[in-house]
Structures are given as structure tokens and as C-alpha cells.
Amino acid sequence: MNFININGKITTAEKATVAPDNRAFRYGYGLFETMLYKRGVLQLKDLHIKRLLGGLKQLGIVLPVLWTQEWIEEQIMQTVQRNNLDHLARVRLQIHAGEGGLYEKDARPGIVIECFPIEETALQLNENGLVVGLATGLNKSPDSLANLKSCNALIYAMAAQLAMTNKWNDALILNTNNHIIESTIANLFWIKDGVVYTPPIQDGCVAGVMREHIITTLAQHNIVVQQQSLDFNTLLQADEAFLTNAIRKIRWVGNIGDKVFGNSHTRYLWQKLFS
Image (cartoon, rainbow, N blue to C red; front, side):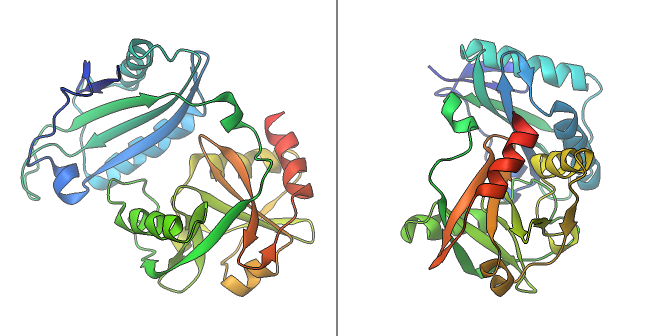
């Protein structure tokens, strides 16, 4: 039986309810973090909390005094344990603006914590390259909200549907300048002549926790990641490409259309980052 934590109270998924005027449900007014829980430890916890608190401040969502970082972490641990997933789990933490209309400032925010089992093999570098396509007609604006991991995810949902229709493993998202910025659930890196690149935050990608971790850690190994806008032709000329998120870490892309990518550099980076 799956258990969910709503505002500090754990209940079964069957009994979990959302109010009709929940502002995450009505307007996508909220943020979420997807975190890897492994053997009692929330992986990259500090980066997740930093991103969450920064996003809440930007959205004007003020947490109750008792909802400290320690309280939130304790609620996550209790939810994981209630679901008997102490060894390995994917945790989804959502904080939304509460109930009411758009202009109600004093509504108490809400928190929802879910956790799901995952296999240990999901954390390894994929043996078969992903087949990826381009989600045309769903351009994302690189505005002041673009870098948030928000509950407003319609572009990603429609791109994922396009990927399923075309039997891709994932779909790449374009911004309004027709630059490729990310996929439906991951940030994007590519490699050309041994140099590692990723789209800049200013182009509108989500400010990924694993993205930040990879950029910082590679720099410690004297491997600098260059941030550069990416068009489709440049991607097709790359030697390798890979996607990153907090759960799957790195997944190498094998094909985009007729283009076939290698993975020798990607495997080398995996060893540097995660061995």
C-alpha cells in the first residue's frame, strides 16, 4: 500500500485528496523537487533545498514557521519509512501556494510528499543509447520563471506525449529562439572534440540539481563545461550527447533521427563523477 504525506500527516494514497481550489491544481502555482533517497541519505540534499527555498522566495510562497528545513527532512524520512523504502526510493516533494484565488496572499501553503521504489540498475549508466526526438511547436519562453522546477509542466507533458507517439525515449525542448535547452525530464549536455557543453541557464532550461553538481564536480577534475546556446544542426555535429537528472544521473543519447552518437567520453565522465 502506498502512503502519502500531506501537510505533515501520512495517509494512504486512496484517501489522499486535493481541494478543488488548490492553487497547484488550478494554476500550477507551486514547486517540486525529485530526490534520490539511498540508504538513509537524501542525495544532493543541500542543492535541492537551496533550489527549493530560492524558488519559493521568487514565487512569494512563505512557509509556516514550524516548516523548517529539519522538519521537511524529517517528514521525508517518515514517509520513506512508512512505505518500507529505506534502501532506495525516488522522493517527490511538492510545495504549493495553498487554496484560494490567484490574489489571496495569506493562504497557508501546502506540502505533499510521495515516494516510489526504483531499481538499483536505474542508477547505472544505460547500456543502450536513448532514442531522442525534437518536440517542435512547443517552444518554452526563457523568462524569469523558466529555471524553476514548477508545477506548471504542460509543455513537458505534451512533449512526453509526442515522444510516446513517436516511440522515442525522450523529447528535446526548444525555447522561443529555437535553441535546444533540455528534455522533458532532464538537462542536456553534449561533447564535441573532447569539450563538454551545456545550454546556459539564460536560455530557459530548468536549473537542474544534477546539472549544477556535474558542472562543479568536473571543474574540480579540471574539466570545464562550456555553456553555449545550442541549435539542432550543432547538436547533430556533436560526437556525444547525454541527459542528466537527480535520479538517473547520466543517460547517454544513442540516436537523434539518423544521427548516431558514441559514448566513450560519456563513460569516462561517468567514472569521474560517480565511481
